[in-house]
Image (tube, rainbow, N blue to C red):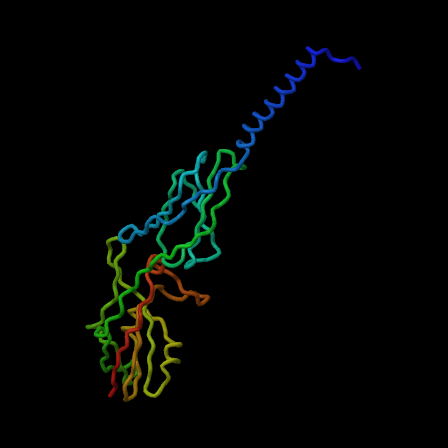
Length: 258
């Protein structure tokens, strides 16, 4: 093989240097272009609103190069396995306020999906719930009555009965369903509470209480669900009553039957 002249050697070295430099420059340009976006930082709850909007705002720091963001979140109160998804262009998102633990994470989206960022770590936030008012002790009174066969019984005095109410989006709602436990004389309070029944307000007003002489204790409270479905599971209607309000403590009313 012929030897290169000094001039040819210099030219070859110069070409090699140019190729190496070009490769370095190209690598420096292409490698960043192929990297995924940075994971969103400073992800957290900005605020939680009450009446009348009932919203939760989540926010995070902007990611350079992102065209949008995907948020995954879970309400543990509703279903801790159901992941809800929202996609936005802004560095914040709002969604429905639901009491209990909220879990969430965010990823940045690139115009090319293969460059989407990794999700941020799952974070949790405890959303404070409201509590329904307790049932008024004065609203549960009994009057002597008879059933359809003329047998003596007691009925609730509907003249003093008063539904528990709550406000949602500037409207006053009446709680429709109540839990009631009856502790007869010389019976177990624990057993009675374990067997407490759910009644609508109308069912209670029409209910016949057969009580022998003695002092009875009634435990009553409004509940945040409507009724039990065919499978025995509570049906949440209206939904906002359950997602916003917790059940209050029992109201205890004593009544002495003649």
